[in-house]
Image 1 (cartoon, one colour):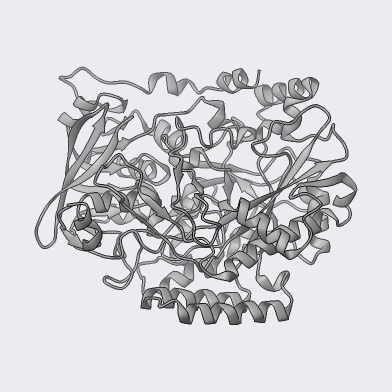
Image 2 (tube, one colour):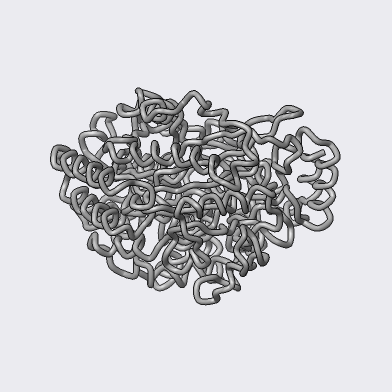
Length: 627
């Protein structure tokens, strides 16, 4: 019933999307015709039809005198409830039809675990796989980039217009989460005419307000304007859900499908780019790419520019496979060095997460799990979703909070953590670039200006099939401004082999301490009124986990990514941390540009997808200006 429901909401546009014209006419729209795609020439070839790539394609094809070809390894998933239906988040994770399903190398500081790194493999990329949370970071998050020597408007003032250009925000209902007013009403900080519909929940579990009240009782203030430059505190989060359909909104729907009829746009799905073709020189000129479909290699020609939007994992991999990177690594795999840059693949930063699960007293409490255990509730919600585009099927996490360390660490704990961090930084033999980043982060930490920890409440248990008579909720906690730095590099000359991903989680002890503390707070908030009256018992970690050592062991066994990797083709000074310049051009080239999360030089205390959209919108304007 649930899956049929999702398919019933399929937009008619999809049925006309996968078209190829006869060979004597130019292919446009969505295609699987690799040979036909390769026979055409393009002004711009975009590698990756994910979150950023489809934004750039849509904006460039507003210019009718240019042609754009996009190459994407995944396929269009619009109409698939695993992607479209908000309440089904998590169901596509680890399914290789949707997910690249990468793994890290053994993590030295996390019990030698190989940790899953999920990335969306579809048109729309990870925006089709994520939890749909939509928020801007704090002003300080972006202004810190300029302190790294990055200009050209890569700061709060320079990015805010592009957040607004992306989004059409529908304000929240009044009274949600116990806040008397509405949020999302500030036209200065919420866009009203962007391509991406953004809404606040129309369904709130009866547990949402008790959770918010309990968290405030622990000293967390409510923030009614988290998109206005300060995203700390507790807030009612928006989500990329379309109020008109009740479905996920993302670039595949709102940037591609709405523009697929343009004759100057073609998107090849089911094709993996393996190399960027370049003409040596000073500077090097990108001329196109090679890609593989069903074991056959093709070439696509770009007369103006190649835009690399393959993401934080695969963008550095493709640069290295093409001869741009650290010579020591390239020579190890017999790849000719075209441009030497040892910063390619470095500066990997991520958020981490741990899920705590709690059993409820009332097995009839409306949660996402109740859909699978109560047929009456399921039928009621099916009807709401189908007819009104509302109800629990449109539900996303809305109780979200970001916390400076000062909120939950005592002054003595904070002083001890900072002192140990300073000792570890001094012993780490950091580069000048890394030292500069660490000092910026340390200053922000001590000032309490950005969140170091995030908490998120979810009315249901993500990834667990409930049984009749049991109901669960999750509290997720995240490390949101980690000091640890990792890398992504090729481990083979085989372009279809996964790269070596080493986030180097918990390189610095303070990163682990933040996540342990967050897990303890998740337990504490469920013991605080009024939420405590709804909770039967903690189940994972169990009630037997009580000491700091117990919680540390639980974290080491369960910590994973928050799916926010950034930084591996960073904005920054040439030869001192940077892979791309202020116009996102790869150093040493004239026309190879990177537009995705890999250019983010310093992690933000925020869910990153809105920032990736803003980067792509800004990049499109830079390209259009001729820079």
